[in-house]
Length: 149
Image 1: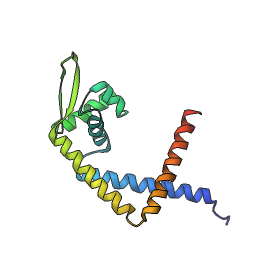
Image 2: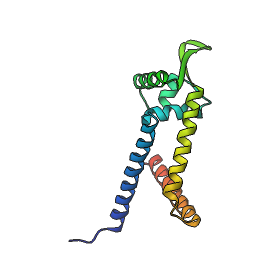
Image 3: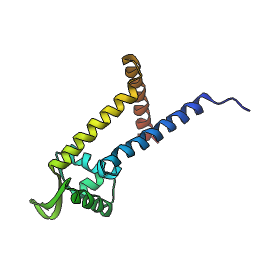
Image 4: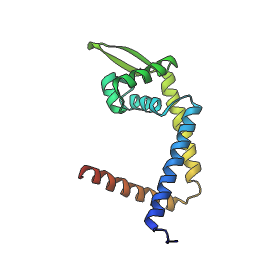
């Protein structure tokens, strides 16, 4: 049997980490009754100042207009968003976070903070700092590579 290539082993650890993080995040969101796309929609609304027209919201969340409508409909049913005509263009619809939507985002953020703290709790401050530097270096390298195919 051929010895394992260190880069292959590291890549597999990264894939395993991504899989575990994705699964845990999905579990955390499901405890709040949200899907990933619903969460991203709420987060996008929060980042745009709590309201946005449907077209830009669909773009920001990388969803089709039809998918965005379905996502917003589910969030509307739960009272997390409200939908109304754009006062500056009656043909457009604006979606806004409700107080319940903002509160849910605060709860999720607190839960995520606790989960990250628990996951990184076994690392020293120095190790966390080193990890943050390594991850930032990798992200910047991959983002730059994507810009120059």
